[in-house]
Image (cartoon, rainbow, N blue to C red; front, side, top):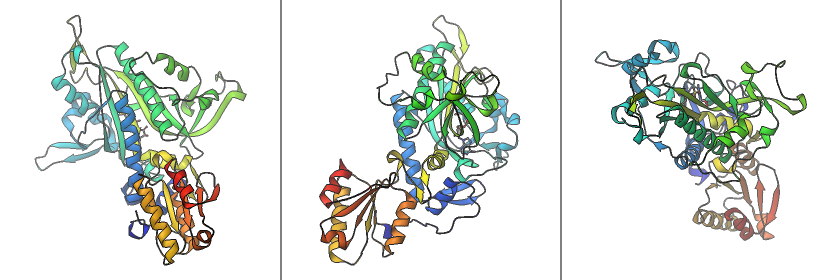
Length: 437
Ligand code: 5CA
């Protein structure tokens, strides 16, 4: 993509309304634009990151045996009356009435809807387990939407729902998602720590929040140092195997949010206790028959008995993750994208547009990188070099490849790694080899 043709409305000034780094940087880097309180449009650069995150989530969930569906954003109130949550949900739910005076709502989550889909067709334990998910916009009329996409009113969530015939099966489904979540966040370059959590309005009695550590996190978190060290990607994973040992490895250590932390009862040696701030990027729940019972979603067991199906639900804040990743990875100059979610891999910076040799070298690199499948944002604009470097640092692509007449005269270009600031002067061929390796 040529920057001269790209819709990238960057801001020089720091927007006054933004209180935290990710919100400031997303506005300054032209990733989002506020539409109304807690509701945002996603502009090309931001939308690319959102799609990257979705792709990682999708890939790992599909490996874990989940199947993607797409449910509507607008749901009928009757389903929520059946579960008893229509009144309980209160003012957070956006209620809508259609032209026929039917009560509808903009879904804050989809337990009722998926249970309705399930009960219409699944009748036997033979068809279980199943895990269905979608990636869809939600609306919650939060009292205090803030921090940009981190606590929005409209936000993109991945929500998955598991169905099993008994508790043992439901726990296996829960474990699968627990492990899949560890891998999803690790793939994004994040360290997410599962923490014991309350189930809140979702209900149920087994629940973990996945929290990434960042100074601006909304809640204080406490965990054993060992959890920071665990590695989840080096070994392969067999989702049909017993995953209890992996889950136990993580849950044996203390890890709680501040509402559950009691300094006097904390079992961890102070030297091993990490006290930090955290951002909740995922939340998983086992809630048994909380919805299947009132909604009469039943299956027959191997013994011929009819029982309500056992359920769990599993959320990831896809749009929140964009902000959370920036909170965890930025500096004074701008965003530092982890490779896996970066909107483009390389910023190609032409220091002297109009100079024939520089132009030719840039065009050649641009064509070769694209031919090799490397996503490049080519700064072919006529801005000053200082402005170009500032923009490149602000939007935070992992690599900056700079080409100018002085270097070219010596046969070199400059390759900078955004995360470390390391710069190498090398030939264009060597730079290409590095970027396409
Ligand atoms: N039904 C369950 C799981 S499918 C559920 O709704 N869980 S949740 O309420 O915990 O939300 C799941 C994830 O969505 C959270 O972990 C968080 O990352 C994200 N999320 C929740 N509220 C917001 C919000 N207002 N803005 C942005 N992301 C949010």
